[in-house]
Length: 134
Image (cartoon, rainbow, N blue to C red; front, side, top):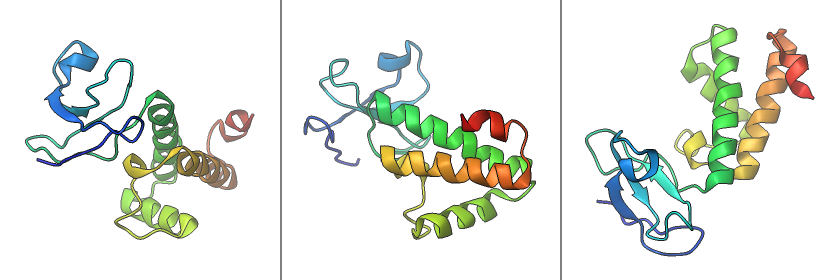
């Protein structure tokens, strides 16, 4: 089992059922013992205690969702393989393969992913790309 510290308050995260967050069980999460006041958690890979990324508060979770939504459009609408899209993103962000995971990114990195992905969609003429720029 991993030992995670909440990056917001420094407490040691607890491995708990996700029911505490969602009201229904979807698996396990590492959650700050200060939840819900310190609203920081991260899910784990199915059947393990390995975190999917780093613990995140509401702002970071919001930006990770935004980054994934726009980035996923890049590879789906471009009909490129996901691995090729991640290679493009790694090159843009100058990160290694091990470092380039949205679930590991901070807010600023997520904002950069959104910016880069929207630009890529505009270049390729992706649907609604200009509309989303505003």
